[in-house]
Length: 470
Image (cartoon, rainbow, N blue to C red; front, side, top):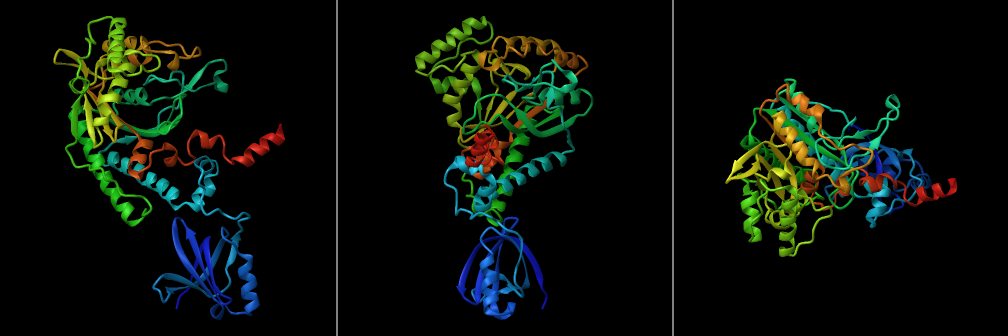
């Protein structure tokens, strides 16, 4: 007979008699039953009972014994001595926490008592690892680009501003996207690069948005739109298979997905599909002044009975129409392709049916965007023109007096050195984890529930401490 020493937290116990107690120990998400029988442990009955009374649910303990199975067939550890308390728990753990706000404010307790919450975070780790393996298997180089810089380029969004001791008086910004940095690396000769990292946008919080979020972006020289489409189908199909097995074998609290990921995915071309869904044509987006286009789009929205977005710029109106008419058509994995140029200032333009559109696609699943990808604009002249076009659409929500809006001349100067034809691809990692975990709130896939949880850790105790300090 051989003996094992097992350490873990007491999750539950069953006091069968004065001489027999069953404990459930949990370590690293796995549960094991420990059996304490007076006849095996030895000593007096009083010592046996007194020692048992000193332990409580939540304590972290060490148990030594031999493995075996109970008459009911459950794998167990049959203790040969009293357990050692390695770290006591001074509070009685709740059975569960019903309030979502309290769960995230006391995340350590939530994870302690909720196997589902723990399994979601473990699944997230597997998903990110799968992403990384897909790129490494294709000879991509993983990189880390600057998080703090002078400009927060790569998207239209309000940045977080800060200062550095080395540059006092100079406003710096946390990045809102790594795109321009990664494309500089491609210009420098690194033909296949990817980054999994955190972005920051000083905007609202809702079920699917958090100011701090994780993305995965890659850039591949000489890759075209069809290459990006094919990679995306392969990635999601293989990931769906992996998640299915993980849920069967490890994460049994998480429901299996009903969504199918067999390729090829459905495709919708933006302008024809939108016009068909609306039953009305879009105005000429290419040859008219921006003010005329915006006026006609606002008139179209009134005809359709759709409320205007805040700051109704041309891109925002087109995005609202897409969200209203196209995205609901995309419950199963669907590519929306060839967006109007106004929606994609960093993408290469082409002419389709006498309209200026971009070599771009979005992957929509369950009505939500998961992937945004396109052939990169590599002409410095065209890119400068598109940056100037983008400036027309900066609005109060995405502009701050501390940040001067303007053309990113530094990036345009980098393009003058020659960016090869390049395919770029971006994925919202948090949304991907939401999809495969089967949850509808981003806070569930974030370790501490996002910004609301991070700034209120400790809940009532934290508030009481602040009150005392005041």
